[in-house]
Length: 194
Image (cartoon, rainbow, N blue to C red):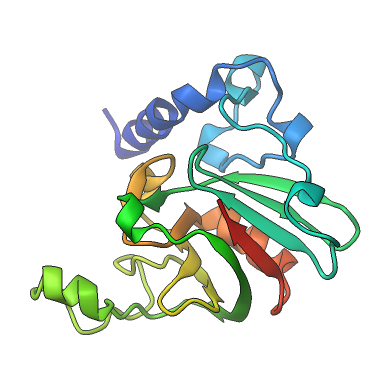
């Protein structure tokens, strides 16, 4: 099996639970990565994602709002004009690593470097001190730094992580989708993790 076919198969296998329902991905504003797009309607369907209303979580849209749902493993974004986007995500490995509540985007970084947190280095002293931008970087190609120390919404080069409990606290998106979100989000955007 070629590497491209293997990746396509893996991406489809991971996405299958999310692609089983009748709601069209386009109906809820979900943008799928190129390798998951197809011409047939069955693979454009999603499941366990439900469109939520920003008013359930915020009093106003302001410059935009984000809700990261750790149960359905989806990130909801509303632009200041009410534009709605839905992205599948990875979420923290355990409830102990999952922080919930309100925060905000305090910095946007293209091609971020990654530095393991002190608690990560305590659990695994073999981790590198830092990882520069590139294909080995766990933060992918873009990162939105949150007001909570060490918490990020970021991309990932490891597409197997999306749809799974696989992070040490961050919310991960496909690289293609973090670029899309990054371009839409302003510093100061309010964020809620539920």
